[in-house]
Amino acid sequence: MAEAPSWAAEARSAATAALDDLPALTGTEEEWRFTPPTDLGMNGDAASGGAATGTVEMPAAAGRAARLTFTDGAPAPAEVAGLPDGVIVSELGEALATHEALVRDRLYSLAGFDDRPGALNAAGWDAGTFVYVPRGVEVELPIEAVLTATGDRGQVFGRTLIVVEEGARATVVDRYLSPDLDGAVNVSTVVEMFVADGGELEHVSYIGWGRGVRHQATIRAAAGKDARARSVNVTLGGDVVRVEPTMYCRGPGSDARALGLYFATGSQHFEHRVVSRHEAPQAYSNLLYKGAIQDTAHTVFFGNLVVPPGAPGTDAYQTNRNLILNEGARADTIPFLEIETAEVKCSHAGAVGRVDDEQLFYLMSRGVPELEAKHQIVYGFFQEVLDEISFDELREELEAAARAKVR
Image (cartoon, rainbow, N blue to C red):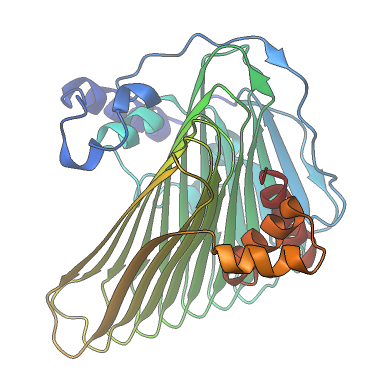
C-alpha cells in the first residue's frame, strides 16, 4: 500500500486512539450475547495462523470488467478487461492520494470509529478496494475483488469503498476465500457504499472461507433519491462468521434491499445482524434472509426495521426463514421493528422449520435418490434469494456451492 496522505494517517491515528479508549467487549453485551467477541478477535488479538490444507481455487477472471486480488492483504496487479471511460477500479491505499477528492469525504463516514469492530478495522486495514462509477455510466460486467487468507498471517483486514454517481449502474462482488487451515485466522472487513440519486448498485458478498477462519464483516449502504441499493450476502464458509449489513434510505423514493442466504454445517456458527434505516419519506426496503442448518451448526438472525420521525410513506419488509436438516442443528431468529412515524407499511416474519418429510418422500418415491432429493429441496428453498442476483454465471456458481454442502 502506498504511503498515506496526512489526512488518512490522521484518521488511522484517531481510530487507534478510539480503540484504546473503547471498553473491551466481554460477551455480556446484548448485541454480542450470541457470538463471543473473543471468537472474532474483537479485542485486537491476532490468531495463531496455521498451515493450509489444500489450495484456493480462484474463479476465472473471464466475464469480469475488472478484478483486484489480495493475498493476506497484499495486492496483485489489477486485471482489467474493459471499463467505460471515467470508471475507476483501484487499490484503496493508492486511491487515498490519487483520488483524494472522491475518497476523503466518504471513507469512514458510514462505518467510523464509534465501536470496537469499526475502530479495529479503521486502525488496521491493509487490503482495500475503491470503485467509482461516474454520472450516467453503466458497467455491464461485474467488478470483483478477491481477498484470500493463506494462514501465514493470523490477522487479515480488508476495506471496500464504492461510489456510484447519479444515474450510474454497477455490480461489485467482494469474494472471501481460503483453504482449510490447521490453525486460526481472524478477518475483519468493512464495505461502505454510496449510491447517488437515480443510481443502481448491486453488491454481492461471497464468504467462502475454509476451516479455521473467523470473520467479522460490516456492510453499510446509503441510497439517495430514487436510487436502488442491493446487498446480497452469501455465507457458506468459515468457523465463526458475523455479518452486519445496514441499509440507509436517505432519499425519497429510494429502494434498499438486503438479501442473504447462508448454509451452516459441521460446527459452524453464523450470525447475521441486518438493519434497514429509513431517513426519508416514501422509501422502500426489504430484508430477506434464508438459511439452511445441518449437523451441529448454529445460526442467528437479528433483523431490525428502523423508521424514525419524518419518514411517512415508508414501505418496509423483513423476512427470515430457516431450514433445519437434522436433529442437533439450531437456528435463532429475532425480527424487530422500531417505528416512530405514522402512515407506514411495515411487516416482519421469522420461521424455523425442518425438511418436509412428505416432500422428501414424494421425490424419493419417484426414483430421486435421497441426497439429490435434499439438493432439490434446499435449492428450491434458496431460489427466492438466488433469483435476485442479476448475473446468471454468478447465480449458478453460488447455487452449486450451496448444493455441494448438502450431505
